[in-house]
Image 1 (cartoon, one colour):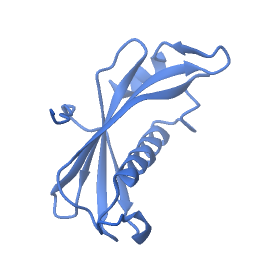
Image 2: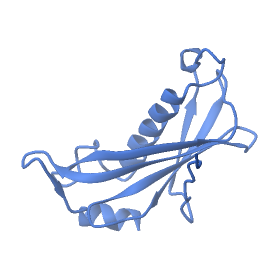
Image 3: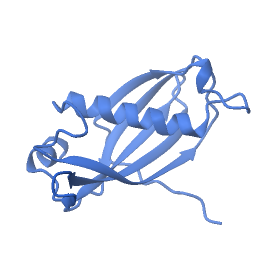
Length: 140
């Protein structure tokens, strides 16, 4: 079986700080994979707020839908570790893009790289919509 390979952006546009909690651990004693997905979501929302968006449902009348997600683990993360989650953008297309996340530990070691693909969505019409021009300008 082939491994997930996530292509990183040339540069990351934002950094979020996340401190892990004891409740983020799984039975293996390290942060669970479900929590990494939750941290990606939190970092994405922080990034969007830094761009001036109130929420993921606030792109000039459009929202977005996550189309896929992946994580490549590099090292374990434990309770009460501070992580820097860098957020970047890749593969901008007509309807959306990929958000890429690089998790770094306090010693600079990469703990994980993740990605979420999104498309923009008109919830009133219940249809996929084109990427908003204002969003595209902010991320290019």
